[in-house]
Amino acid sequence: MARGLRGSGKIRLLPLIAATYFMVAGGPYGLEDIIGKAGYGSALLLLLVVPLVWSLPTSLMVGELASALPEEGGYYCWVRRALGGFWGFQEAWLSMAASVFDMAIYPVIFVTYLGRIEPAWTAGARGTLWALAVVVLCSAWNLRGAKAVGEGSVRLFCLLLSPFVALTAVGLWKGLANGLGAFRGTSMWLKAPAAGADFAGAVSVTLWNYMGWDNASTVAQEVQEPQRNYPRAMLTTAGLVALTYVLPLAAVALAGIPAKQFSTGAWTDAAREVVGPWLGLCVVLGGTINGFGMFNALMMSYTRVPYALAEEGLLPKVVARRTETGVPWVSVVLCSLAWALALGMSFERLISIDLVLYGGALVLEFVALVVLRVKEPELVRPFRVPGGLWGAVVMGVGPTLLIGFALWAARGERVAGLPALGFATIVAAAGPLVYLVARWGQRRVVDSRG
Image (cartoon, rainbow, N blue to C red; front, side, top):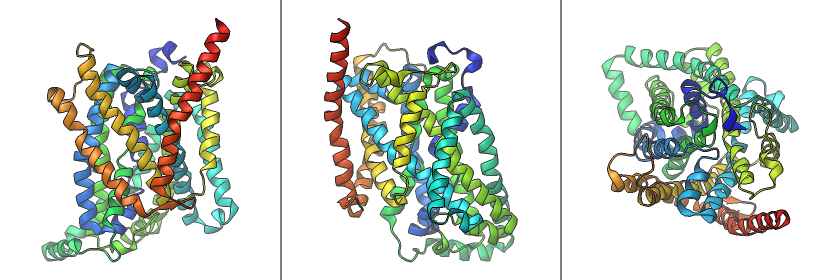
């Protein structure tokens, strides 16, 4: 079990930062649609402002709760302790339901970039087979343990960002080398709206690219010195994500790449045009690392939630079975099967549903932050959100407003013949019914033992 892991078998600070980076960002991949929908000027503005009203409050909230309550299951345990078993279960339900759609995105990204190397490799059913291969390989990697995933994330992080270091350096150099007059012309061009602009859609994609800070909390018992390392990891990663988003985007803007060229996978063309074919190939390979690395790190996170539910008796005990290295292997297998079933849905539809479900879970976490401040003022908090009780309240305002905007922006999306919001609402509304079934099963187990 994770509680029995020795310090040498736990995730240290640097691997925790790398794993959190992949849970949230995985590099600039995924920003293309923001540029294509809103243009460079609005995209840069969104990438600078959203971290202040979304990422920073969320990372501060996670820093306080994860250091105060470093339990396996993370956010589920926070909400359960603050609001009771029913709302704790809804937190777990919303998070796991969101994961079905969130996790389907990353194999799609892997296949998208692989197809840019050789389209025939991913044509037809081959694309689905490659996506399934990502699921299987990440399952095998996760079965080696959380430490292996964290340390692997450090190596993947270095490989992933190497092409963007080169792209950013050359793009900035070319832009500045053109002189002040060219720079002023570029600045005016940046302010022009892109053709077919969709600012609301750009906001939704931006939120998706900045969400996931709470995911690292679920492996708290597998982290070395969680009270100390979680706040440091959250704040460090928040800055790192913003930096690795803004600099490459600014570089390709200064290099003169038209915003209308950007859609999913377009970083390859930008690298080829700014530097050369060799960097284009490196970016393609980095894109496959992005999809694989994010899926791998998030698998480690999400699979601890069913384990925590099983420990509470809300899922069959078999789900709580672990390997000798502390991996909940039954949960890994079951979650992988569920995520594989969601493969093939469109990128936009996945984001709309994911934001609705994840947003509901995130709001519950901010509520738990405030409620625990009131209910348990003496709880040892190695790290605190500044500003006292009202500071904790204010932290949730920005993210909640942005979630509301994302709901409005998704009003026109449809999935399975239903509005995306309606579909997500049905999924969320099933949570209380599933809870009743889980409680019934829990009582039956207690009665049979009694």
